[in-house]
Image (cartoon, helix red, strand yellow):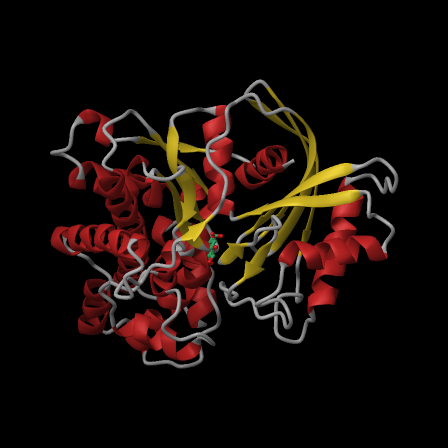
Length: 416
Ligand code: BGC
């Protein structure tokens, strides 16, 4: 029977606990960084990426192919748009499996993607079809409507894609299988897709987020009316002005890209399990604990039988009640910190927008949708940080299903 060192568990829980001031400071620093980035001031830690798509008018319509590539699961679908209603007519998905690492080449990856798109198109190699592509990694749009991958995130490492035009790679794989009738006409980030999907189907949406394997936020930048408004992909996961702890630093030492995507490593599902594992390893003075997922952390917090079994499996033995309790509080602290930071990013962005108009924030992503503690903490933190703001500056959060697929189709119609 395992018993946790009391002092060590208390210290680990404390390390993941942010004060209200810490959270408010993070929100203020984010707001300041957006301002710096817009003035091209190098002191910013943000890389604001233009999308070159404004808000949809609501009149977009037609049938489109949509591709969603950005996490461990690849999805392709036919999407129908009509009068502000989006329908995913048919959907195919496939896990990327081991195609995300450095031993995979660009053509292996894009041949695999093209095969799924071909599947979704019903292997029709004659009817001209337009494809919208949600590609969820920091990418810069090019003048010909393509986008160049700047660098991989979420531990993807496929060779030969960074610095390349992504839709050109996809088009060449489609051509190889005789599917040149499918034209990738648009490529956007998943947060931009989420904003488009919500603006089209719900309305009044000027900010969006993906809170899942990765974390990011986009918003509508109005440039003080001096330029055409554009949806900017903040690549918020790359924000660095955050208060890190011992476990965050340890995690940095393990990842291929140390000091990149700092905020994402504290917030997103790709890293939550590892943070918890590092803390448990420290508390129990072990260095042989197996990998954990964010679902494991959520289950340990729930404290039900499934969560207790996960803890036993990880530690290789039962824990006494006090230690189970400590593990539960630790899981809570890791999840709460993630949500409080996400809320800080939303508030900092709102303060930058300073738009006293009713609005929704659109969110998609499994970590947000499946973990009530995350949802509640985001809500409570925002309520606290915005309590002195006028009512319109206190937006509600709407969750959007299939946002990436729907947004990709909307982008295709806007670019056609
Ligand atoms: C990527 C973003 C993306 C986010 C959510 C991050 O790792 O850098 O571009 O929006 O994940 O998928």
